[in-house]
Image (cartoon, rainbow, N blue to C red):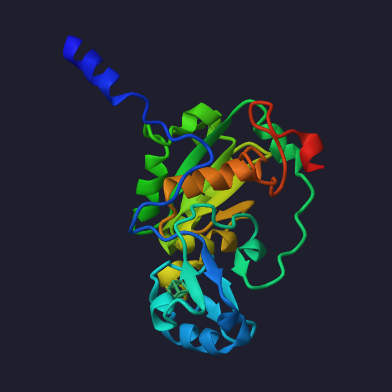
Length: 268
Ligand code: SF4
């Protein structure tokens, strides 16, 4: 007992402060698009190696909702067109906000009903809808002492009846379709739906398979998309907090408040 108290004292506080720091290898963070990509030449080279067709060489855009962060494009163009950083702050929001290289649509007005959900706390029910469980592991890691999502008033609950919303991973296999719809219907309105990772956003590497629905948005309405394959815990927390205007130093993507910070005035 005494030894564990001493051990605790030696370890100190491991909880990561906000804003989160750089991602550790091998995670890839927010990519930057260079002039050679926008100019066209590098976009063609990158698109040729992109298995998930995240790169459109015509519009010269990268869809982070499809990207699996394999890094093949960066290798192919030798970093001249696309270069991945270690920045965990990936664009999160609607599907349109995930497209790099395009002019992002204006931010939607604050959804005050959803924002009111987070006035005190947010309870989420996680649904693993047929992925590889990579995203589930990272979601689980958001609850460890380093990321400690409970300090933000966010928690996971066992029953959708007790939840304010769903957090969904995986491309939604046919076998999970009905279960997902039933779970969604069991959450009282107003309800929030968050799709985590390339599979949940677009089907990811399973896109087009007869066995999947190509993402959560094909089955139930989604409010927030968080890209990655899998997204790092800091990207997941950043996406959720930023959605409610609670991430320090960043403009709220849709407004709202958690534990009173951020505020509706800020997001209106
Ligand atoms: S990192 Fe993304 S955009 Fe680049 S090749 Fe891989 S899936 Fe395609």
